[in-house]
Image (cartoon, rainbow, N blue to C red; front, top):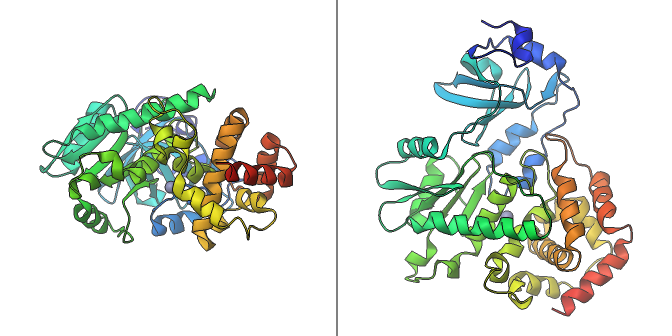
Length: 401
Ligand SMILES: [Zn+2]
């Protein structure tokens, strides 16, 4: 049995970690956490109930942001979890599981808590394969590459792992040539590929997260997995990429959040997250090694939407987009179009400033609020104070595309 002080300091080897020690750990942590707005920016088709529960987190004074300097294991409602505590208070804990999932539970619900290591250690690719084979029934099999573990129906489906690995290479190459310091993912990236849309929807509903009609795939920030199905098989189309914009979009979210381009547990501006993913929908971006022209890098759908709103475009549009995610809730078509156009404009004309901005936002403190004035300050620090001039340049750039 470890003393409370020893556990709090993350010393010693494996042994019992009494749940009472939360009080000690909490007492020594910073007490500046605010509501977890950060998760909203990570959501594409995320779980509303999960967000709602996190919004209630850390309102009390006795809370702490880690990560803790140890790994722990416990049983929560009969389910074994193991990982690194990221943030906690006396009512709730967020723990990064060894599989990359975020576990959210009340400390009082933890049974048989014990410390299992002094640093976070993810499951290996082969450990992930074994766990996923148990989680999914025998109609599925597992393929893996250097970074991905892909669950897919038995048969001729293993190409998906290499496709995702190829997208990963394209993405990291794109960032690397713009001098962005890409990090290695700390966990294997998991993708679940379903046979068809019906199987995908059925699985989501059984998990308690029914999908909106028309959903073609999603990245779930809670589990850190992407879920998709092969639309090309349904439509008797041999080119998977013909229907793959959604898959590329979601895979971009997953990769960006796992290689340090975005920070998974700090609020990121939605225009930045969505803008980057929409840029990669264009073949000239995700397949940049074989196609090189600017025309191929244009997301035609988003450009069309942007141009349709150009006549009635309000003043201060950039400040509104950068300072708040509100537009994605009130007028999503316009917000997505603005997000793509601003991202593409900055990437094409000011790539170094764009990457500097990505790094600045990704360096934010986890689990902290990101008010509008701070968002604007980060943006103007990289792109200058004259947003009116920038807006005029943006519109001219779009008109010339
Ligand atoms: Zn998205």
